[in-house]
Length: 276
Length: 293
Image 1 (spheres, chains in turn green, red):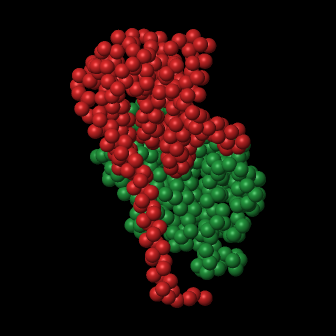
Image 2: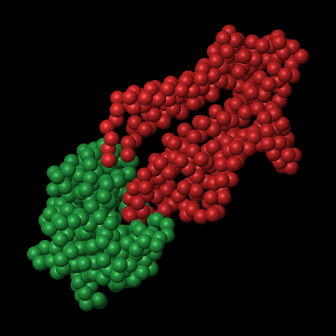
């Protein structure tokens, strides 16, 4: 079912997926989180979180340090379980299918991720972007070159690197490296792109470019971004989820509405920068 | 409450620091002096014996004249063979320990086992080689028995070096690969292992320099007192540098006559080990400069 839905999404874009979601699930959320809790050993990082990530636009996950926002994001592509002694309760549905029971390798082919610190492989720029398609069996040179160019263009990096695709990715600046990582994730043609504080290691100018790129990308796929930067969330997100200490979801809704009129004092305090 | 430090306290603390530094420096110096003394003795006594003929000729007249060529070649065969046999197993074990094992009792037992293997006296490896490779498997006293025995000896060194090299690869590389839908094996093969290769090879060179200097593991399994020709097959005996030195120093009827040759052979051995270690250090430094993450 996931395969069918994402295949549709790949061929026919967001509109097709939207139609599919409405017809089959009567919903507009691509990811449905239901009473989701997560534990690191005995420590509970997320408590009974329920929300639906809308198919359209950018959804920001915010909250003070240690509130579990990264854990929630990394639950979507099953990255948390790389570490021992973790446990999840509740369900997350991706296009209607139980994400937590699926094969994590398959999940990650549909849900891509960009990390907090740029982490290009110590390979050439080309090989970095081609890594995902190669993992999935793409061997044709022409096809790879096409995918690499398309992905670098979508990540707004093509013009800067097109003449030296063979150079090491580590020779790029921090901002370029992060856009390379975005391109690398896009080359797999995911339906969802997860971004874990992608600008926290970058300067303001590089941050601007990533934000603009993110807005662009949201025209074509679902973006979920973790940020602790209020202005950034205000600038780029359409929906915002606010988690508070203990991993409790305190607020979820359209960004403008939440920022204008937070439903509880704690969220208001957080949004006014009084803590966190 | 913070008290002002009086001038006297300050003076005392500085004096204590000076004493401590002096002691630390002296300890370092003494270690350095010991190495220096060894090197000096070797060079002073052995340098004269070293010549092109010495390195390329067979021993003559009951080893009281001539060179060390067959011993050099033998040592090369044994060490290269040991590395060839041990490296694949070591890399595989290191990958399993570092990437796949999820901790727990079993893994701890294995790791302790590997580390204790590194502490087993080399003569024990020699006896094991004699009992198992030479007798049970019937390989006889041969290159293959010696290489297998040396392989066992350096295996724990290589495993540990490999594991450390893999652990030094940033976690973010693994996460990056897995997040693209790679299986763990694919991530190891295409990203983690290539990044760890320089570290693994440095470990390999250290393993070689350990193996090349060992006498006990090969004296019952591979080494020949004297051979008039180079080994032609893997089941031939070989001469080897450390054993050759041992023989000249203890078994030769005229061991005082061969004093210069002994020093020369020892210097050649030392030179090989030092060269390899130097190579490892330079290589690692170069790779580190090239790959910064």
